[in-house]
Image (cartoon, rainbow, N blue to C red; front, side):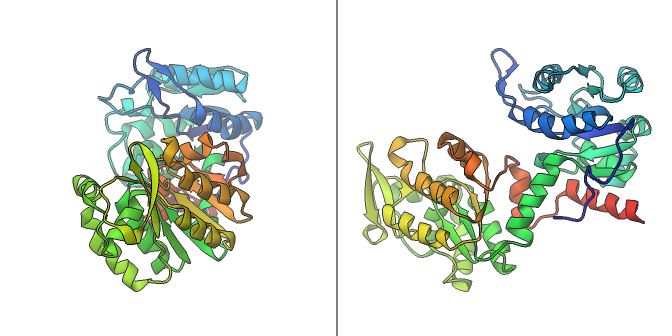
Length: 410
C-alpha cells in the first residue's frame, strides 16, 4: 500500500478528529430526500464508529452535490441517517467554520459525533491548490486550531485538490481512515504489486479511460492481458481494421470515440499477443439476441454484447489469473437479452481464486444485480479516483497523506 499512516498509528482518546468522508448520495429531487445511504453507511460503520469507540471527538466534513445543481443540499439528512446507522446521536450544525461550528466542536464530549455543514457551501472549497496554499484558506485557518488529527477517508474524492481534501493534511497530524485504507490496499494488489498473471477487463463506453489504462498497465508491465468488451471492444475491433457496420460506426462517431482509434491501433501493434479482442458478437435483431462471428462484419444491427465464443476464450484466460481488474460491463447488461456476456465474466471472477477488483458505476451495478458482490475480492465505488489511479495519475488526497506521513516521521 502507498506509504501513509493509518488509524492504528495514533491515539484518539479525547482528541478532536476532523474526518473528511464521502457522504455524497443520490437524492429524490421531487421529495428532496436521500434515496439510499450506501456511502454514509460505509463510513459510519467503519471509520466513524471506530473513532467514536476510541474516545475521539468526531467532527465530520463531507459534501453533497455541487453549487447550482438540484442535489446541492444541507447535510441535516445525512446526520440523521448516520444516527440511525450508528444507533447513537450524530449532532448536526448548519455552519461550516463559523461560531456555531466552533462552539459545537468545543462542547463535544469524547465519543460524540458532530456533522458540519456541506463543505461546498464555502465558495473556494472546489478551487484547486496545493496543501500549503489551501492551509491558508479561511476554512482551514478557522477549523484546524480546534482539531488534533485529520482523518482522510474520502478516497472517492481523493483525485480532487480541494481544500477539505488536502488543506488540513498540511497543518495537522494526518492519517487514512478505514475506507481510504481499504481502497489503497486493494489498488496496491491490482496496480502496485499484482500477483501474476494479471488481467485487466475493460468494458463499458469510456474509451478514453480504457486507452489510458491499457497504455499504463502494459507499458509498466502491470497487466499480462487486456480483455476488451462493450463499446471499448468495438473500438479495439475498429482499430484492428474491421468495419462494424453503419449503426455501430455511426454510434462511435456520434460519441466522438473514433479519435481514440489511432492510439488503440498503436498499442495493439506494440502488444499484439497481450491484447485480446472479441471473435464474435451479439447483435439485436427484432429486439432479440443473435450472435455473429466478427468475420461476418459489417452488420446492419446494433452490437450489444460479446458472443459465446469470446466469453469462453476470456474465461479460459481468467482461470489462470492471480489478479483481475474489471471496469465496465461487456454489453448492455440492463437488457435481459444481452446480459449473458457480463454475467458469465463476472461469475467466472466470483468463482476464481484470484484477487478481483471491481470498479466503475455500471460494473458495480451489474455485480449487485447478479448478487455477486460478496464473492468479489474488492468492489470499489470510487469512480473518478479509481480510474485516475488505474491510469497512473497522482491523487492529490493520497499525495497529501504521504507528505504528512513523511513530515510526522521526521
